[in-house]
Length: 309
Image (cartoon, rainbow, N blue to C red; front, side, top):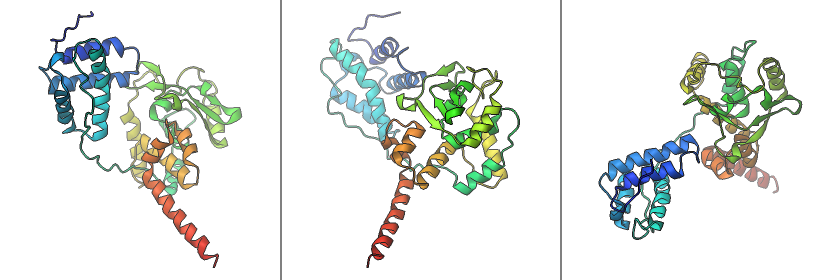
């Protein structure tokens, strides 16, 4: 039920009502959950602060307190999730002046995140040792993710209709809600809607596998709930048995991208294949590989120049 908000009401109560009015039904559930988490932090850090109490100093203190236990980018996201509600409260006269102006975003230094991926020999070792049966199972899932670089939820959402065998392509237009088991969901962003080219061997294999399956039903999802950990455990057992680095399904996505970059595929093409919203995302994610390739380029340039003399 909609409550009439007054300037003397708690900011946490206003923010919760703002989420329910403006965000529920308008954004993906995973994003909505982030707003609810922000509400939880408001209750923890500012339990008694009223709307009329919020000034620039109070708001900066909130950001500072949150930043004590979060990285700078996470703090920036927290700020953005608050700012929309606060601006609306200013417009409604519940807060006297805009308190987010000139806010200083702080935060802990990000931990160095080393991406786990397999090299070409290790990936080949994994794929040739998969137990590929006559029917769809998780080993087929592992193979397809390795060859396409799809996200876990994208691969779960695949239906026979998504395969265009004549043109050797796979259409990515949806994801599967494996967390709440509610069915199909939109892709992560607009750029995630894409077509991925697949090799002839994969075409032949999957054309047989999906031949008699319902066109609009996911090929990897049964009546049982799918857990990310289940598939990761299967992949981990394969890796340990083959004495190669243990990676996750998401690590297969990194492996796919890494091998393409090392093969000389442009960053723009890799970004499109992965469904990244921009090349900047790809560059940030695979910075260490790009730097390694640049070092190789320097060696090549030097060798080319030395041959001129």
